[in-house]
Length: 440
Image (cartoon, rainbow, N blue to C red; front, top):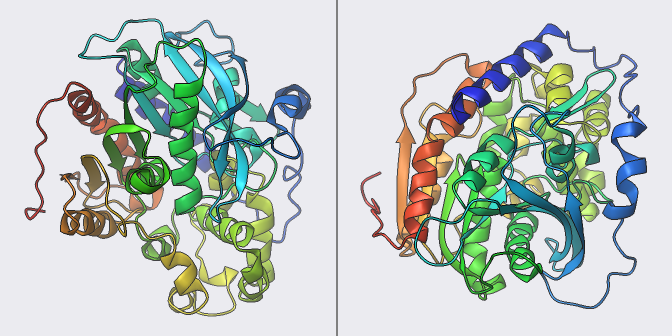
């Protein structure tokens, strides 16, 4: 079974599972909100995921601790394997305000040799939306295959299908958990600077990790789709100023949420409307001085959304909040409010395209993406082209299909995954690029 078919099967089964569970009324007690099965959580993970306090002196990308990590595709570990040795890492990074923070992730040392030119390359992998609870961290999910805790707290690391393919082809991988996913504090979902820094410092940490087959001066590429596409895009345009020591050769940014304000009407009424709660929690965490004014714009139902989703993985958020409309969560017209202060400035701070990538970029977007609009991704490419960047923009033309289930957001990740992987491989092998600035 190909990677794309396996991933599609998992996607369909997940959607069927969550759609079979009727969403709770917003005012109903939520018996699962704070209930977590300890056998999958804190007892096993507390020691590693609790950062030193205070953080020791050092530089961004320094490895604070590491340990071997079990890698499985499903809980038993018997049905297939990831052809790599896993290392769980905690490394030093910087938050959106330049303050030091600890971030966790996983490094994958491939069993197979690199068949291409030069030293083994490193892909810094930004995962797509996993959720906002600590149990959703990819570095935890690689140990479990499938996470489950009663009643709807279920998660699988769908990115593992790409990782399994990549390491089998000889790519080394480091996947970040981002700020606050696994570690203390709330995950700063889609925060441009925090995500970009976490990606760049993950690359540095992998290069500094002892006992790998990496050349410290070897080539690096960024990879991500959806939330990961935004993180990869941010890393690409922050690399020159924040991490000039990395030898970046390319970036794949699939369906990047380049302008968060555009997402609100697309998310409204969809299966993934709950991610708006993740984004607002992130803003409140990153910029606490605006917490009161943000909360003042929300109804009791909206405040309930924020409180619940902060402990959830994406499947649980879908099951409990799918197909809801945004307006009942707000006391004012939400679609006008996002263009008023302080929201306008806060979301503008997260907009991509203000800086120039220091290496070629492939942007992929579905023209009919029902969640992350093609228009914003296209504008990102135009902005980078105007700055002189080497950009190839690829439009997936898959027609609209079950838009409120965001099928056309998920499918291009699978359908065009091989195209993106070949593009990244070409960058590592030094082949000429095929930019199409002025044509898209």
